View 1 (cartoon, one colour):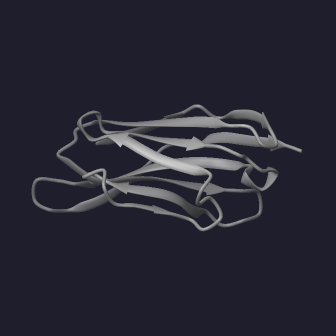
View 2 (cartoon, rainbow, N blue to C red):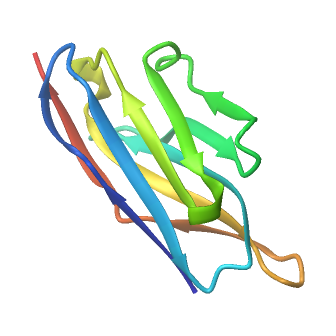
View 3 (tube, rainbow, N blue to C red):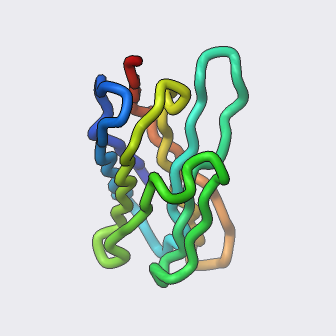
Length: 121
């Protein structure tokens, strides 16, 4: 079993910054991608940013490009999300996930419990 734990959420004013952290732990064989999604009240969960284990390939939602940066430490199975120039519409619960491949090649996605980010206007 793999556990995913996020931290770093909170309340920030419009234009402020926050840094989210996420660590995967447990019976890890190989994680090939980690990422962040978010879900605002009354809306579907949406992708924010992902990063492959090589640390080279990353993907961002159009709404956060130029403001958010994903980074990570593959050796520690951790990923971070630096969020700058935050807007009230960024308010959501932010979820981290890890795409894990076991020794026989089975892929399973593990999710954290989420961390609340609130941006006040």
